[in-house]
Length: 356
Image (cartoon, rainbow, N blue to C red; front, side, top):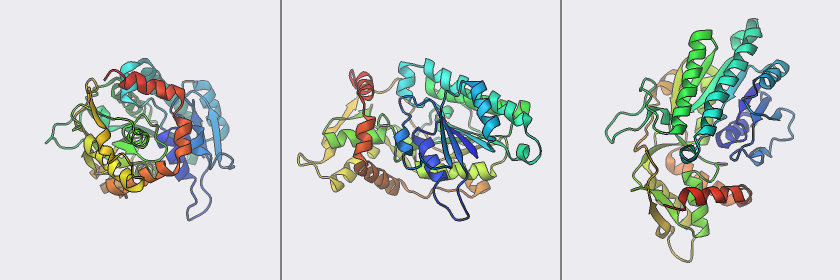
């Protein structure tokens, strides 16, 4: 068995669905999902596996160290894959305290529970145990137009409360390996997109607004560049790192798809126009430039040569193929979108974009 924290969120739920998918070589390994079910945690993401005997769910705060430790002792996982995090920059600007609590204190509590559990293991169980911490490229700061992409040795320069909280959690994971010998692995990924993404993030927000004929808010001049990583590719990379990564190491995971935000939005519009034409005209007419986010990092780019060279992983999706899959998924799952777009979500959108 493995434990997954934050498994009802966007990336975590995709990882669990991928993990439990039928594969050659026998039955999938069971998974226990620990999730507090905050605003972005959605059990609907896992409806297809919820009744399976190899899927288990515990609604639990990772800060509840003793309860988490008791679960480890009961189920004896061979690995913990730690996704649980507050992850939206805009929310961290408006309310940083929850990011400190979940991303720093939560990771610390989980590390302490894992250290106690690992310390009780012996023999093959102890040798096989892994703690894999999933993090972000935002810890590295911002790049200029001609700067080399982020590598695993790029100095940390976080520029938002979100990225600072993730940087702190990265440092804790590193310290627990070097101080206590805990068998850790860390991954730092670029911007994910794909099915089940909460519609405050750029691509699902643009899809939802475009289909409804609402303005498509683009920060600043729209030229902030991100390296776009399809979530299915991210999941396959994490599985590869868990299986063969060197202990104590960090692996950058990127999609090799640098693109400015405005081009992402235009691409979404073109795909929607082709799949579901709007009688009022092309959806690019809805693009609205709004006041930029405070401290908005200009460019991210990932150098993923280490994971390619050491572990043989490269992304399967181009941005074009991944975005087409993503748009099609949202068009085919409107009921999921409607359930997610609750009153609380609408209040958040009004708060973040209302005065811009």
